[in-house]
Picture 1 (cartoon, one colour):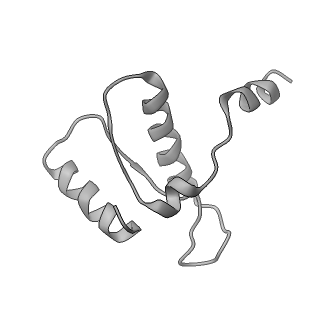
Picture 2: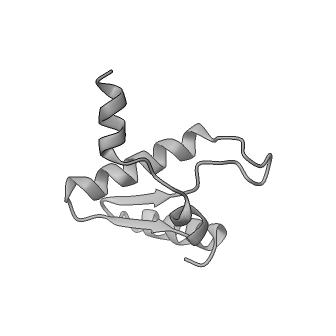
Length: 84
């Protein structure tokens, strides 16, 4: 979707239609309150969306450009530091 508000409305509409395997992929930050402040709820939703993508199951992910442009750490990087 073109922006966060439009994406949230679409996600809500699809959720009300009881769409299965539906995920919302937001930014990790609370930009409207304080630039750069992380939002744990958004981080959880991002993680759920990414897990759905790598699982290979058919999923519908609703997002917007700002969230998609945010970098994501690779699985290899996470494994490297998780094993330490």
